[in-house]
Length: 132
Image 1 (cartoon, one colour):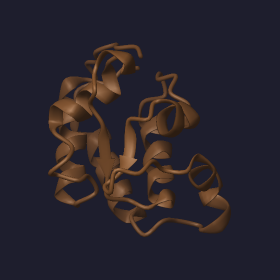
Image 2: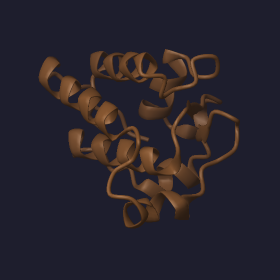
Image 3: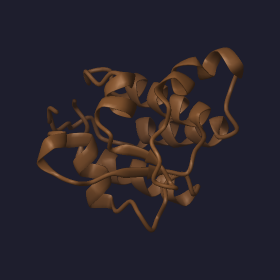
């Protein structure tokens, strides 16, 4: 996937600013490793403070912002076992997958939209290609 270090840092800090990541369980290094390194080479995890619908929107915004990535929703939330709720439990893939059918937008939609708009507008186009 093509995402710069600066973009990862900005995304991380904005998610923290809106309390969408568990600050006690997800360091910047953990966040970066999950998004850029082979999942079998580390024990890092991302602990979101979001419900399933909000996580689905995060994934949708992420893949729209970084269309070069090959990350599928199933890989991100189920196969990786690295993206989990703040209570340490995994998200249910079927719940995330069907979230748009149940609600038009999540309770975190405005915040996520703002985060990704800012990320798109304020970052230089330089990219670091990393693959899973």
